[in-house]
Image (cartoon, rainbow, N blue to C red; front, side, top):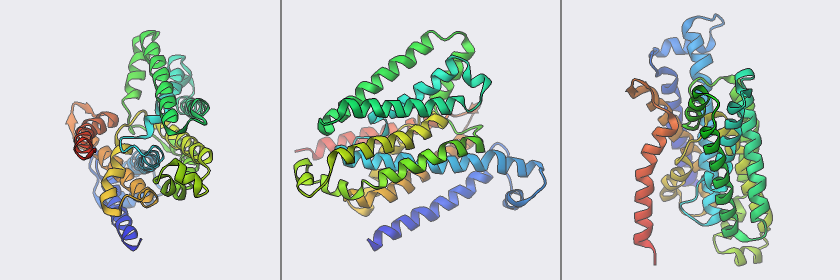
Length: 329
């Protein structure tokens, strides 16, 4: 356990370094002195505005969203005992995406800025409820199948919205949002989603001891006193709150929840409860690094965060599949 805390502390220190870099980096690089002055200056000069109104909320959101993705990925891999599980497994991500798409499609987001994240939260919670209702009492396999069905339904509805978009601008807004990004996010978005991410993360952390028992099998976990319906409900609704809140603000960001637990597992071991905190920190670190990279890679327009995480995460996914195939009995 002492080693776990050392590893978590090392990730946390590295996270602090990248956090500072995220305040410096951008199309306009700011000296460290100007950033420090901008954080505490009461005057609304250019440096202060860039730091406090653009880069700081963006960095805070990257920490929160990345941590939520890493933590939920670790919990879902433990609940399903599937190393390829990730937060989108339960249909929550696409449910949140569908909610935000509805807000854009019907023009609510044009007249009320927080409409897209609010509708996204509602979509995520409804998707979580539907997944839990369909999969309740059927074990992890039924839960996963229910999540796949809800994801397919949400994806079909999103495709329909794109197909029937009332004008090219609406279609462009929907497509751009689905790519995932932290650009142009403000303190309004941070304040809106932080309670949901915190609530969801607390629910997910409460699964730690039950996940250790579940690693032995469902029958063995029940014999040790684990309440499996309670565990599944905590996993589903914790993911719905945390990932729903995150997706509602950032759009769909893939692979962070899949990759983060696998990166820390060789360092802390395979006991599920020991993976949770390091996976959350690693998820925050990965997303913050990816967000800084989108600002440093110049391709005419800023590269979307979801696109970059997919480009980086897909090779890792292929490697993981090949490794599992080699180690399978």
